[in-house]
Image (cartoon, rainbow over the protein chains, first blue to last red):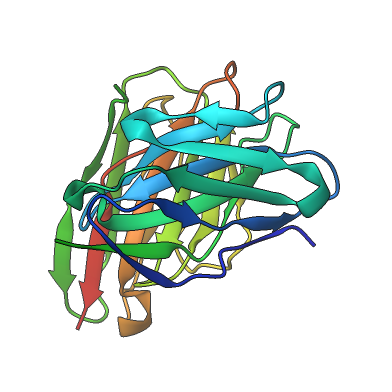
Length: 114
Length: 113
């Protein structure tokens, strides 16, 4: 069965520290991979996506993610966290067939300490 | 910038009432989706549509219904709201081209007393 696992429910980092949010997926083929961010009371905003090609993808707000096929992972990273990065982060996978249906992980809540 | 709008943003209503959550997009996207999100939980797909007059049930069973009479409009209806329907409902859309990302509205937070 297709699934997405985000092992860390909550993460707290200090402002200026580096960040890595983990995402593992279970999928029969190579999926599309996404990271979305959700601020309180808001919808989801796309941070970045992996479609094909270079396995290190750059996104908005200084985020990047690396697709590792051997580990079925798509971890999100940022070298220096800002207080405004505090939010909930969702990893998602989608089929390469043109259905557009995404499967989401449970989300990781990021708290940033001053 | 995605243009997908949901109303109302917040709704508190009594048990047994009929409610409709509106979702409209101005991007001409064929595919539209409704996800349900409980606090601290992942999003679950409850309905989707591939175009006008096309609606399908998603992975999570829901007592709600949807319609797609116009491309830009994908409303969700609960005929008789119950406290178990309390949740956030997120509408999304995507076009036929592109690499599969969804564009989300800001959500409708429903509370049924």
